[in-house]
Image 1 (cartoon, helix red, strand yellow):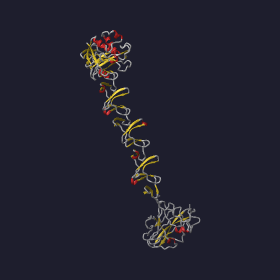
Image 2: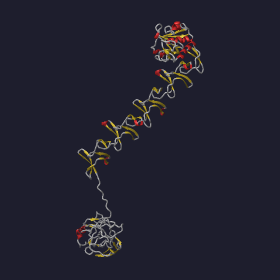
Image 3: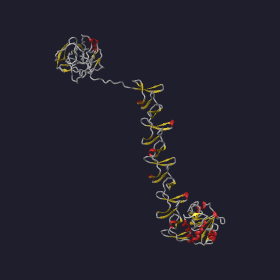
Image 4: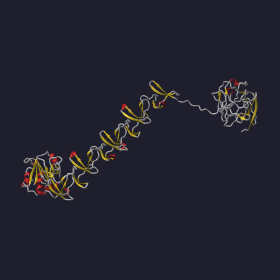
Length: 640
């Protein structure tokens, strides 16, 4: 690189003095003058100079007249590295600064970092000021008398012979004369033209037009000033109603084209659907505003009423507004219970804690009432509240009192409840009262009207009895009657009804009159006639004479009375009751025989079970059986 020195040369223009910097290069060829390439002096990178170039034809003249009216020095700078340098003959021409009054266009540009101009006046660096494009002010150059000078400043550029050939192409004569040197301070950010849009209504359709390209917009577009999102089809037309786009259903307002969200009713399809925040129709289970909804997987229609969720194995209920229901709900005349967390419909036994009750819901989820047979057990539920009943309960339409355990199941047989023994019918569960026989304990006992077993001495219908403490077995009373009753008790579940067999139980079969004859004879009553023994006993017609001849007397004929334990009853008019026309048995428990609520019971060998094996002996409610047999004419005999 060649060494160089800076020199300053003073020039006088009128009354003003100017300094110009000249770079001297120590080159072997010496100072090269003439058509040399002009290069700008180097200035520090932070220095900036803004120049103003005035485009005027008089500036091209080799000798120009300087105007004396308020002139300003003009500094010419080289363009950036790619701009060709302007050549100047040192002695031939000098550039005259243009007058501030010249009406010329002014161009300013920033000086590049590689080509800068430094000027000094009175050993001080003069910084040029940036000229605003909107003003016609000239650039001021600092001199010791610059403010009031009316002289024209001459700017001398030193020709410098560069050690290396410049890569910039030399300017042509035309370029020399017409070039407008500029200094680029900073490149201006040229703002691209902004796209603006406007809605256009043409031929009955709305379009959205890009005013820059004059093209229609398509697809989803947000109209901010109307706070709506709309959709334009491929031909640019705004769409309305239901639209199927990119595999989703959307709904656009029929008047404004605004995309719908949330719940919407599609009137021509009679369905309510939901569109999410993006306007897409929803399907399946959706949680919206803290509520669960169900939408049809195909149509998107909001579901109501009972719905089965297959993948969760549950039935739930959605109200008319589509919201899943929880807890107790009264629907279509029935109470239902839905899980408080999942909404699943409950079935079977459920405890309602805030009402302190256990209830039952059938497989349809409906609360049950009254008697219900569930899993092989009878239960009773309150007719109003559905609460499961426990303890003793009276079943009015069946005229019986039964007992339900703490788990709600009806009880049968002997039950020890709150310190008392009770006997509950083995089939109906009815609490037994009066005299009863316990077959597996071979004893007859007595239960009072509350169903409690009695002990010690008791007088019942004028007859004195004694019941053993601990067991309750009867030991007093009419001995022959008790023994006759025991004959029946001991054969319960062992005799099959038949009029063609032994008739008295010897072969495991018997009928009514043969059984009564054998029971009384076995208890100590007189021996039957030989012909009666041969036929297995008397029939219902001939039995009248056997009773009257062996200590019995007629106490009632077809008139209801309070019957006593041991009374023998014969149904059917005497002389017309033989064969299947009559029936007979013994009162096992006392009571008024003419009332449906009577406690009177009647034990006999009968066809009550339609001939089922080993079920012929039945101890039944007298009135119920009499009514069942069409209330036949009757006779009541009592042992004296």
